[in-house]
Length: 162
Image 1 (cartoon, rainbow, N blue to C red):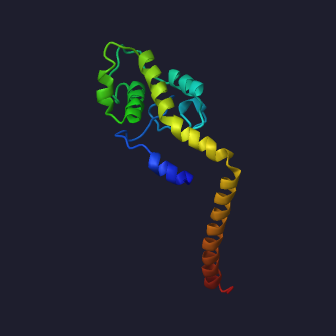
Image 2: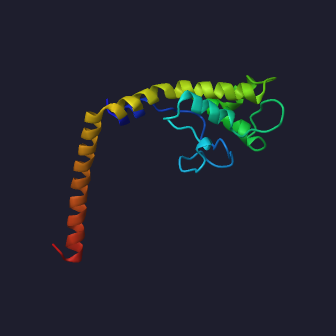
């Protein structure tokens, strides 16, 4: 099965609209952020995920509630956990009555690890399959050449070099 077919059959539909940065919950999680602790990568191992989630920004308010406006960090963790469980963040928050951020962070790290386990295994398998990667590169180059030839032909015709 091709990698993109694997992704299409394993992608996540969740009510979460966007995942925010673990270090700055006022901005979107992004792989281009200079702070590697602000995001979870498919290639992160269990201990890296745990470390990043434990270091995620929350607040000093007691208890766990879903309130994106006043508690963006806590709400972001609840949204991430809800996405992993395909649930609503408000529903997930109710499970944490009387609990603290440590409990929430532990559960988020475990849920992320479980959710990423399958795609990470497939990614690693494909990374080691040099024959497959060579074939994908060859097919991509062939398609790029076909598309560029027709484009360049049109450009040459337009500027009078044909």
